[in-house]
Image (cartoon, rainbow, N blue to C red; front, side, top):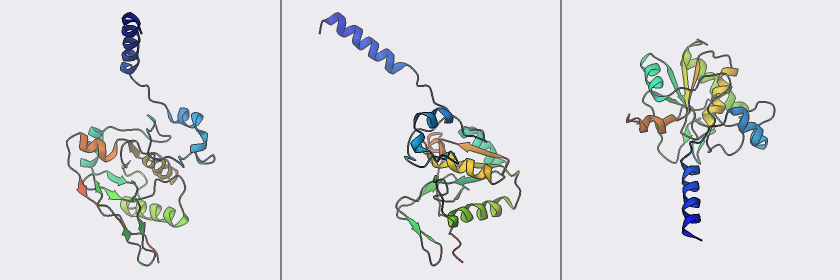
Length: 196
């Protein structure tokens, strides 16, 4: 390749790489890959670990500083991240977690509640603990998160608003965003499932 053409090619490539990526909205994600979403609910059912949109239907997306302010004001922080390769014991409801899990201090970990499809038992698990954590106050501030580039918090945010909670916020960057801000995480145990 001639030196001039090589310089133009490299220059164009650099310009393309330097151009800021435009984040897609929830609707654009669904339009591009409808097979990844449940048609009735619109929740993401496959490839949970992928870049998320800028928005979530029914709730605002908030940044790490807003999370901290809400936390200090008494918001309920809900970590809905996966319990990787883990499950709960069907006899006593305790989660058999293979790896330690760290979360934002004071957060409650309700694993697997951000999946696109939930069993009836997991639906009850989520609604029961929401009721307990908010003391039945549907206007209590809730902050839903997991990790960056994970659709589970996007799903759970919509599921929680559908249950009638009116003050729900989505922290898309989750524990990664909290750590990147320089704030510490703490070991967190998952809330047991009621198997009675």
